[in-house]
Length: 350
Ligand SMILES: *Cc1c(COP(=O)(O)O)cnc(C)c1O
Image: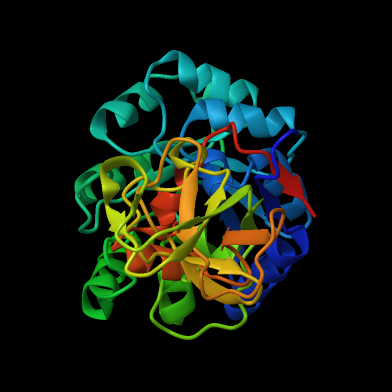
């Protein structure tokens, strides 16, 4: 590693968050959502660190599930989008991976498989998000079919962060549909788990909050950021009032200014659209991003900092400066900031 730029992944914070989420959903089992490389945290660090805490894992695609098996994860693994083709049912069965059935064509493919060879399934009900899931009749039909293992019926909330009424309406549709059937149920993502205990059911499925990010407007000191995105000051220069910085000259000095250049850019997942003034953490305070984000570099105004030095530690987001603050400042989604971090950025577990 030649650059001082990396994300540290705090596995003690991860374990703490997972245990806290489990404690508020104490009647339910915890399925840790680790899709998209564990929300950009590196699934090779995150999944083993949750062994013994998470009761199961969820990913988006079969490839991601097989990667977990290759990491020697033995818990149940759910593929949230289900199969893309026939061959995936056989492969899922072989690796003991659970497939979601999210559409009628997936249900037909599944029912065409001889019963002993059927993989474990979770039946997805479209209770109002209208993205994936079967309608009520489709779910009923699957519940009546023979299975190798008793299925779980699940749904996904469209607005659990902000809309209690819509969320509880989706929940009601799920519980009404499955009344009298022998099946376990799941609905809660992070915002529902935190805000609506009635959604906990048999399995909760947090992603975002496991990583210490807060999807609600509540103050939750219990959630500890797992990732800190760090670098160091690489260069310092004084510029005169009226001079501008970076591509396009989007920031102009109003006074003689000291500019710090930091070796991180949009190729590391720092968003190119970050606005001037986006907070960056240096020595216990915020400094403003000043100038457009380049591929490998950004610039910040450090005129008000006493004696900044080359090599000074910088946090772009993490335990000091919350990622939600960086996202909110830019009207961006912290989910997206995390999920877009590319492979090239080293992740170091601490
Ligand atoms: C991503 C996802 C989750 C986790 O959502 P968070 O808001 O990150 O907790 C749960 N369920 C499904 C179906 C998902 O796609």
